[in-house]
Length: 592
Ligand code: PEP
Ligand code: MG
Image 1: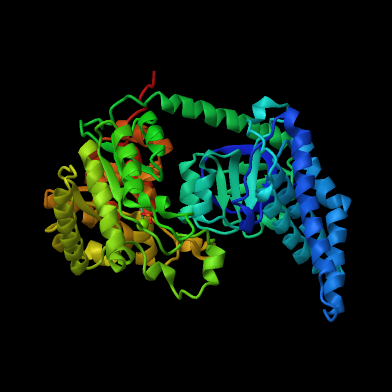
Image 2 (image 1 turned 45 degrees about the horizontal axis):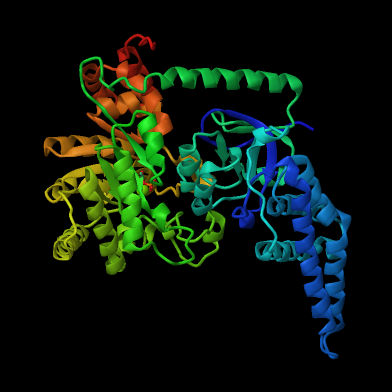
């Protein structure tokens, strides 16, 4: 049966493929393909792990004390029965044979299929057996990890016949897990939870593959292996489409690929407006390896290196100074002399260090994580960790142009503490004989208080970067990760526009450089407006650079600036911008 699910569009384009349902708790299971010649060996690996668990349970049962409750032995029998059920290993083997999934992935795929069947059972007792099944899968996954046999070599789908693209469907994915998918087999994402600028959505966008979040129930309605279309522009998901609909979307997919290829040719064109203003188009990156994509896309620097992703998925152990230094240096070297803006760690809110999803966070006992100990507050609460990060950043400055950016600043006392830490660190490095060069210091404008008191902050820093994602969240009191209030998360809100416009004007008046590194910078819908406000430095996901550059090339910044007051005065700035800015755009630029 064909049906649609509606959500929030986070990443553009169309993806067509088969659904892979993954339980939120199991997104960290390895997902890769095995070569045709290794299919049987992979099934054997699975069966060996299953047998090891059988053996474990048999021993457990034999060793049950005489007086153990009768239910315990009965439960072990149920588990043993499930393990021998054809639907369990037989079903998992099916995914290995048909789709070439590795054993761990095949097992979790089959768990999703069986869990649905249990959910639909009328009988309470049987329905509750789902928990037993989940426990068993955990045990077999554990046994697979212990398995002594050879693990298969991952291959790409091109190495075997099955080339259907795979689209991941999950209730929720933690940013820490999403980052693992950066170079994965999935060509699109659908989640039940999340808002447009939640960090899971941001990482999905950085992968430049279609994604829809906040669907509320996609993971319940879509079945394993269903054919699915993700319309990343409209925020819709079409499940089991008819051949006509499928054809229409295949056409759109080809169109959007052609458009990308066309825009890609702007890579080496300098971003200069019609009236000769040079615009910096920098990249936002999460990992040093992303710097390559930034250079590829024509970025002239890194405007935001979200260093917190280096701190995630480490079971509580933080990266050492040398490890961080190696990562920062790698990004700096990859950018070949272009500036790299490294933001100090911004954990907390929807970016916990461990792999907690937003849903799990909601059930944690942190009352209001977005307003709690996050970003610079966390760094200042952990001074030795903070200094360690600063040392690593300063050491990287010996290899290129490094800028230091501090997230979530709201108090002058924080700036003073930061400056103090910087001085200490410089002294330590000098004493230890480490080379470093001048590093500009900048703060992010993400809290309305920082925007309102900007002239005071500007006395102490070299530059500012406006984080519109958080600035919107805190100005409008809308949790950016909460799909329930996503309709109120409005970049066009007059208060938001006033704060951004004032911040840009004040920084410029003070002769300090100012950029926008929130998602607004990479959305071509806002390019003219930000130019009209006087912005000359944008930072965005590398994949967004060509589309924004095209808008820059067609813009006349002086004429745009004249229209700005009418937009800021309007009760409906979006409509006013449509009216005031559209005619100012000049004709199209031919791309050769
Ligand atoms: C922002 O808040 O706009 C920003 C760029 O930082 P992050 O999205 O990582 O919170
Ligand atoms: Mg932020």
